[in-house]
Image (cartoon, rainbow, N blue to C red; front, side, top):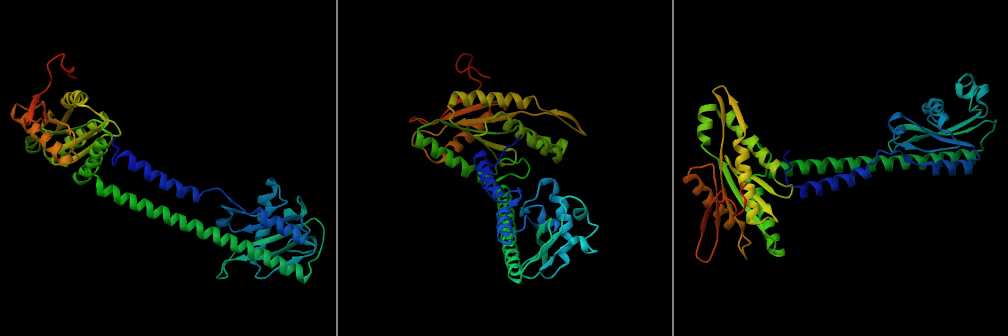
Length: 368
């Protein structure tokens, strides 16, 4: 499975989005403390914010209501959402509109019922703050005004929370769009590996990191032998399939911390952090042999491919990846001249570049 851009970026992106998603939490916002304050201030044993379904899914303000009765009271109180003003019903049993309601004839035996509308700054109603008692009672004008004030507090709390949820969703959408654009900017559209520009950018960082910590790092370059012949005989669709399957094979064979990039056409580069030359040699031959095992089919028949590889390593003090890539490129073209389906190593030395053919003699480094 391809995993580009590199895992460090993917992890960073995931952490950012996760922070936003925590803020956008799907958990119900609990405002029961407001309902409890209304209960204490107005002396009603049950207080509930009866909301339209859109808000009910994520906001809760209730006091004195058991979980088993919460939904039935929401349904009962929903009838009050038609009211434009605060109201109080001394005894619902005596009102024909409420008398046959299940919440009145049965548990929780609603008798006293009062409410004040919940609305946004534009006056759009989205619920009612309801007071309920199993005994008949009345509200004074001062208590009715207090009920309206408590409803205003609940309304503001809902509006602020709703705005926050939309704002966070906008942040998530913007971040996901930014990440998607970044992915498009750094990945090759066909193989989903790093594109040339991104490969050089990330490779430069790895070389500098290796130099800073005095750790080994190796560079591979490879391309498909006689690729033009594949396109000419089997068609460009088959050629694209070869490139995609080969890149997937290589991606599955290297570590998450390694870098794989398509440098152009059928040519690829690999950066191997924390990897010495011997390990790079073993990997090169393993990849070369695995590529030979790929089988393809087209209307013209079945065919196989081989790859040629060049290997190099930044020398002490080299922080420019281009020097290593140039040596790997020269080694790659030597492999082509010497018959293809082989790997060559070019190392820098005071005496100049030296080419070492691969596979190594048995016993030298244990060719794969």
